[in-house]
Length: 203
Figure 1 (cartoon, rainbow, N blue to C red):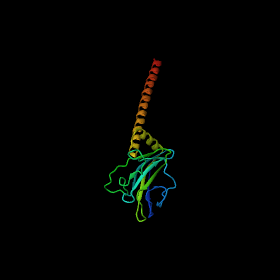
Figure 2 (cartoon, helix red, strand yellow; figure 1 turned 45 degrees about the horizontal axis):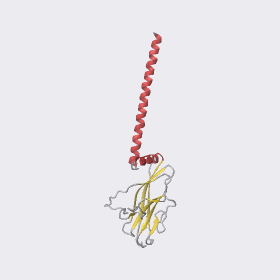
Figure 3 (cartoon, rainbow, N blue to C red; figure 1 turned 60 degrees about the horizontal axis):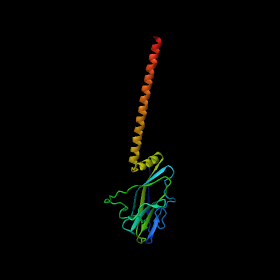
Figure 4 (cartoon, one colour; figure 1 turned 30 degrees about the vertical axis):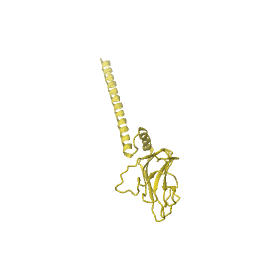
């Protein structure tokens, strides 16, 4: 089944945001022309991979945090809960000098996730903040394979999904080929027995 890619973007839309505000980009208190009426969830038979996030780096001292269920993904070095990744690590829009590779985050069957935007400084109405999240939804057989890949410690992406399918397709082909060869060999032996029996009767 095809992978469903989703990209969601938040904009403050000329709204002033108080200093120290933390809000969901899907259900923001301030700004957000388009709001989701649900939190993204890996439904039954689905597997979600969050591939990228980003936020405007030079306005409001912003950072982004991902929460899966009730657990925050990004923690401080001492293990305490913080506001996530600084905008300077995940600037948006991207520029040509950006080369940080975002490590995918997995949302398993039945889990809900959210992305929280925190601004440590006041954002005035004439300042613009943009934040985004990009994620892929695997469904059906691909979701099953994604779970198996995760169990093997492999990254979940289209390339590895196809690799897994190819390996198992070849494995099935080899098994079927061996079965066919055994069947042919068995049939040939039975044919020889029958011919010998017939000839034996004639003698």
